[in-house]
Length: 303
Image 1 (cartoon, rainbow, N blue to C red):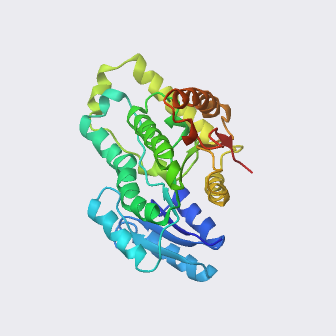
Image 2 (tube, helix red, strand yellow):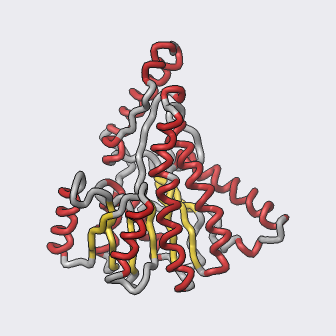
Image 3 (cartoon, rainbow, N blue to C red):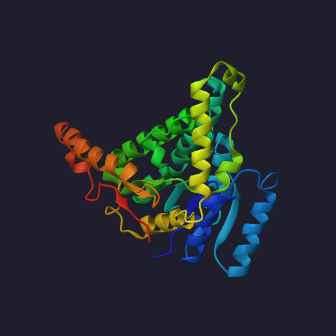
């Protein structure tokens, strides 16, 4: 069944692959990104040309997740050519790593502005439409490090922990309204996200570190070797395919969390399974067990 789908952060990476995959699957897709007429003009034009070439229903829309006005304007633009919105994929995000002390409070604010508050803005603007429809699907693209801690990534990792909590809470609140909230947890993938690396403001503090700085450099070397290996099993298309599979799954049967990680598949999966058991006990004790939908456990969804 053809759905109307909105994806944020569609200029490159997971977002671009996701909108192309969903458009080719026959859906009406709105590929949103900031700077359609500025920094991302080339990406926007390329996607528009691709849509014409493949004769698919894909429209590029300006949407800056850090701006209330931009998100509101995007909703109005989308509703001008769509009766409603069935699926929203919150994919926009920024990444950074370094010693934690190097990240100032302002650095944290900037990362959270995109990764956390940006998701909240988008959710709060589209959710009223879904409540009115009595149906919908919210997908948050989180990360394996929304469940485990990779060292030297405190600002980024903590932002993903926040996304996980927000999305899981929505799962419980929206269950009676016929709206699903699903978290997609990619492992490590080579995408343009690493080219948009956020640099902390206080790197001068590195001069006061010795062993921790050596550990950070070792982490960087090991991480680079892992992602650049010829046999790297994680391919970005896997994430787009997992998102498509979530959308194709009938409402009410979708898992809460979906791990997409062939490189270290047991990492977040193990925590998800234990967490699901703990949450079941908590919700039962609160008398809210009915809010746990059938497929509350995480599933590894890779072809």
